[in-house]
Structure formats: structure tokens, C-alpha cells
Image 1: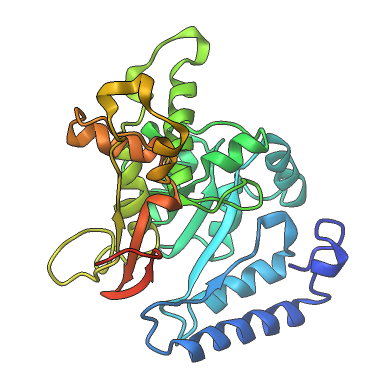
Image 2: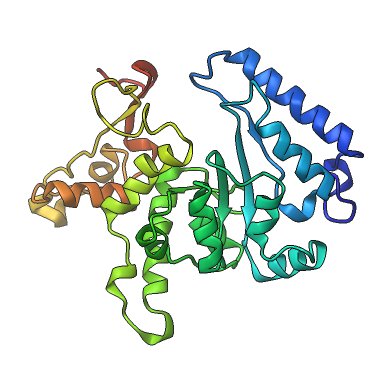
Length: 308
């Protein structure tokens, strides 16, 4: 990021050369850590268009397709708020839309991830789809900053690839489970726009979990490796435990100690269906319910005292 006046001085690259050098050094460092790209990959991040000069945006687009950078991703912000869109029009007056800025500089492609996209026009969404670029829905950040609310149902109906993002520190949590909750709530807010109750706009719990798993894997271009329990895919999994409230039939006799015994906010009373349990976990679960975590079949976390 090199544009003066739009990036904090201690965060800005002095020249295009310095920005490219720092980016290439970072990509090389990541590749040295994981040469085969099994767990890590580099990401070219111009933050958002106003933070970069036209020359830098063009050169970052060229860097993204350079030999050896096949696994390198691109991620940036787009149409997060109305003032930002007006700023892009001012800084790039010859570009038809915000999306065209990235497209014209070679930054809109299959491995591009665009965060937010709240105010994308239909024409812009069609361009994004034609380039096979991806969208990252950041409901917690959008709400916390008052940026706006996305009709994710529209994106899904139009066949766009969508996953969930946190955009910390715009939001307050990097938990994807937390983003599931916010995605569900935001979808209900937009369903009541203009005093109407648009049921189709409301995401289901299953759809929110899809965006967090299969959707996220598609956005990252690794849906052939992770995001589902299928033969040949990496075993990336969490062991979730939802303990039952003790003596739930005698609610008046439950003590604080009884309630805290399961160390969880999720209350199961023994009558829930499978879908009820999943919904309770999505809405009220947290790390206390995560008893173990595997990445590529390797146990990387186990809760103290837990037996597997």
C-alpha cells in the first residue's frame, strides 16, 4: 500500500518498488515454510483500491500470475460502505465501477477473494461471476461498523461462490461459528426491509454452516481437499460435545453447580432432535464445546481431561 493520505504513515510503503519487494519477500517466506502449499499459501493483499496507486495495483496483478505463484491468492475489500465507493469514483474516474478497478488491473480472477460487497450492483456481480472470483460475507464486521447488510440469498441465487469472513478488527471475533450466528441474524434483518417479511431472504442454520465449511473451501479454492467428510479429503474436524443438563426434569432443583458442571452455554434437555442440537450449538456454542481438533488427520488439540 503506497498511496499517501489514505494509509497511516507507519503502515505505508514509501514506493511501488518497496511495496512489491515486501510482498515478494513475504510470499517467499511463506513458501519456504510450506513448499508444497499443503497448509499455508501466500496472499496478495492490496487492502482496498484507495490504499494503492494505479501502478502498484497493476504490478500486483502481474505478480499474481507470475510463474511459481499458482497457489498464491488475492484478497481485498470491495463496496464495504457508500463513502468508500464515492472515494473510488474520485480516485479512479476513468473506471466504470469499483469492480472494474480490480478487473482492469488484473486483480479479478478465479483466486480472488472480495470481502464485504454490500453495495455491488447486478452488473458488478455478473462481472465477478464471469471472472470466477469469490465473495467473503463478513456479517459481524458489517454490523459493528454500521456498513450495511448483504442479501446473501441474492448472491446464492445468482450462483456466486460465497463463504464467511471475520474482517477482524472490523468485527470483534475471528470465530467462524460467531460469523454463522451473525449471518443468520443479518439475513433476518434484510428480510424485514421496507416493512416486508421476505422468508426466502432468511438463511437456515444448515445454510450458514454450508457457508462456513463448503462455501469457505470454495472461496479458498481448496474444496477438493477440505470442507466435507468424503473419501480422499483431508480429515479436518472438530469433536463437539453438548452435555445434557443434569436432572432436567426437576428444573427447580437445579443448582448453580449443576449448571456449571458441563462448562457450556448449550443446554440439552433430552428431547431435542438432531437439528435442534445443531441449532443450539450454532447459536450458543463456543470453544468449551470443542473437545478435540484434527487437521489433516493429526490431532492438534485436546481439551484437558478429555479421552479420545
